Image (cartoon, rainbow, N blue to C red; front, side, top):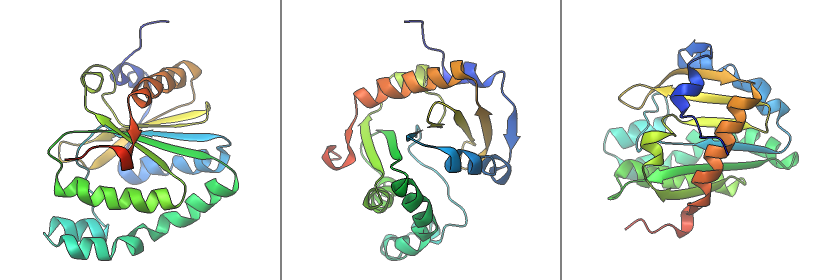
Length: 193
């Protein structure tokens, strides 16, 4: 097997889409065309979600309110999850965990429970050197047709990203995800304490 490229090498030749709305506007075709699987790798321990009332309650220090309004805040994704389910599309997410876990991750766990109730499979693993050497960015892969590499600022807020349909890029991301997933367990079975 060839030596894997890191995600920074992959994005070097790709067009950059600046701004969250411009970047996410590219996802529609991928969500509509996917036939088999969506893979999502998260690499950060914290993400900013401005405009999400549940996240904003968490940031204001009201964990209880954040959990209370979470289902309503996440309801916009229900149609997407139902569409994936009707088409028998597998949605798999992996993320590294650094202990001790934060209130943000406790809140994210509730988000994951919501997602899992609609069929998403979520896996955790201990953060390791692969996230310093190869998996330097979050990414999503749709079948073997399209992939998106996310760009976050230092505060954890999305600022844009890259898209590729090149098979060599996608294959590298698929191999990287596969290696990471091989060390992961279902989030419900991961020892958080």
